[in-house]
Length: 299
Length: 337
Image (cartoon, rainbow over all chains, first blue to last red; front, side, top):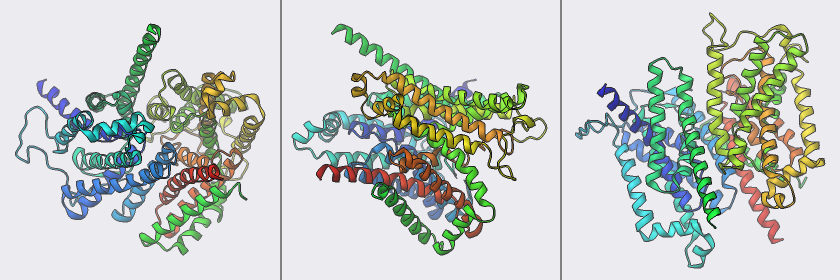
């Protein structure tokens, strides 16, 4: 029984990591006043480019770097369109998500000559921590990007709360005009946040395609970028709470996956993360409304 | 001509970028584009193009109607699947006389799609959860539920294929062409589009929907019950999506096949078309026709020239981005003038 529970924890961490990385990017954008719903497409693009580079070079780490770079560039499109050219960020993101879906499916056929799913012995997956000589009990076979994701959350909390540049990003998001009035280059911070989110989505995609599994399949982001958007909404832009929200999703996915083993239909397992995320979102919104309502009465 | 120009520029820009993509991956555009046109109109393909135009136009209404009220409905797939499986269930399980055997499943499908979309309304108006997020989150479980129903309780026994049995003869939509792919769904959806265009520009409800979408607080001060109007718009959009699901299931091959409703990507082709029409409802059917042409033609291009048909998804994504950028560039130029 113990083994079952511990391996569930491992499943939770594995399921959480890609969502957490993407959500951290979304959170930084939110802090800077950019509503970023392009995470889904960027995550998919990151997964694809990680697989392409890993397949070409035979190195998973090159795949990770490739995914970060390629997704940073892809996020540049969002940055230029919505920050420089002031186009509606929602519409641009909808377009970019569709573009990522089409582009990955198209290039997959051009580069690998297959549709659907690509996996190959040439494709190097990320090593586990144990293979790197770091044999941790309890957490199961995790890729090194899992502790990296957790460390980045802590780093983001420190950066946004304790550093000059972090506070400036928050100022930009909280009151654009005031930030401009004290001489902050609002656009610059928003470009930066959008690009950092792109890099994090690249990392998230690499973890998804080279860590969680070692393959690429069409649309494999499967809504995780949207769940990341919800996690940002649930977090109240606090990194600690973001981690909790993402863990909730990780638990839902890991349990859903497990329940398939005991005869629950696959469709229920597919739906579980969405239903649980939605319920959490509704409960949080209801609680927020009550709090606002009480404050209103106090006034 | 001036009215059309941003859409024309967007399409031209997207096609130029697509040509670059083709050249980059070593496809000869001189082979690919004629193959695309043939795929859409030649050798009896026109019937498939018209058959695909109907659900895409319907899904365009499903997105455009709530969008006029300021609500992004990206959950079209879930509403489509809910409508389709509900229509199939009614057609299979309820013995009905002719005519009613078509009308009742379609009505049930409409209702199911409307209900799924309406779930997002109180979340948006009362809890301030953006519809763009909630409709998507609701969509995935709705698709899963429809898939479950088609695979287990409503599944055709003994074939191992994830589909319902063939619907009874009475429930088949009357066909307008010999092959049967163009059904009375075409005039029905065209009529609905006409009604929407009329309601949007000429009726009180249409005005209230537009007012709600343009400035919710201002509309509220003007006496519009904005929450109710937004809910109607979302439910109405979802209803059309549910109807489209019913029309697909009641047309050839006369059954709910798991994934067949969502796989062709009607929902996002429609989103691209509506955004391409950039807030001019009259242009929506034209934009839908153009993107359906590209979508169906893309399959011909894949067959003939070996270009993956996902290229058309790239075009759609690019069109949306270019339209969004052009809209602000024009607005700023307008502000300066």
